[in-house]
Image 1: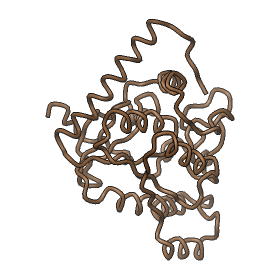
Image 2 (image 1 turned 135 degrees about the horizontal axis):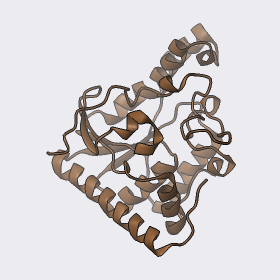
Image 3 (image 1 turned 60 degrees about the vertical axis):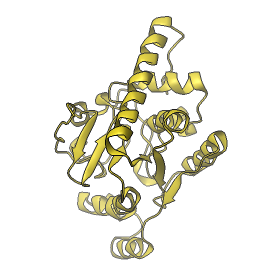
Image 4 (image 1 turned 90 degrees about the vertical axis):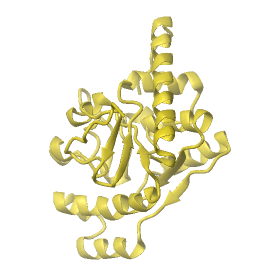
Length: 245
């Protein structure tokens, strides 16, 4: 976890980033009407949850319980709902699809091949995600430019051809230090796994703490090459910019 020391200049810069992020969220609601945020329950998600539930409540928040989440992630969900007196709608994988995958590949068969891992993500995450965003015109993400080269080229608002709606990324220009400064300043709940070196938190078997010098995404699917470390929610082809709309 990274925390900024108190610095008036940094505080002013963060305030500008907060205002810009809120402006992107309001713009999305104005353009698209029905907007949903699919929360990962990670650090960026804590920022977006606070901004949405306190400043842009028209945006719905959902999250996916894959069946393999860390207990700390589920505890965090309860803490958030108590803090903001709001509820996230939970979506779960189809039981029969999970049973088929486990029956064919074993409980941890995703370690055996990239194809198996991507299929597991499809069953446990992508399919329920499609149900979660059904009926919405846009979905919000916590992508940041400094997370990966692919994400560095992502525009704030873009058509998402994969799902047939628009993707909204209000935190693109934020750094990890910005995220933690916001969380600490506003005393926002967060996953205690971050204090143990976890930068990105997903399913328990597919997430580990970072080692010294590793990139922010290195703790996800660490047994794979860096080029394949996405679950499929964010395809590796770059979206077309509609920043002029």
